[in-house]
Image (tube, rainbow, N blue to C red; front, top):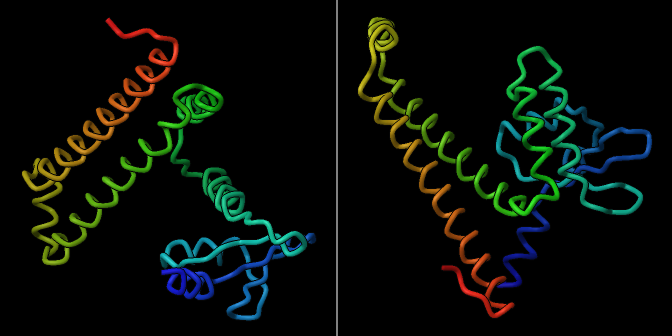
Length: 177
């Protein structure tokens, strides 16, 4: 099993970030831009960004930079209220539950998008027109599925919180009423 992990690690594309803020793709032996890194994400390529000096994994900070540029680019995805809410979760007891909750919801939306794309391939322009002008049962079904998955993720998060609370109370010899 360790051999597979080592092979997977060596197959991972490595991008080095130099102090001059330049990114170097070791696969193509060329300097690349954030737009190129964004394209790697869009292509679902597996990569890691490492600080050239320390070797530290800084992939998250580069991905956050891409999000920042996208948000500043004119069609933001996050409202100020959403961003403020995310900031409030840092340091809060719910912080540990937020990431898995968001991840499950985004995955559910990706699945809805994939299903829509699969169904849309056979649509003619006339079919698209009809689809867009009336409420489609297919769309309702897909969104219903997303809502159910979101609800399930939230319920799992609540159950985990209750278990954690029970453990904390149990440590003090207390039980929930």
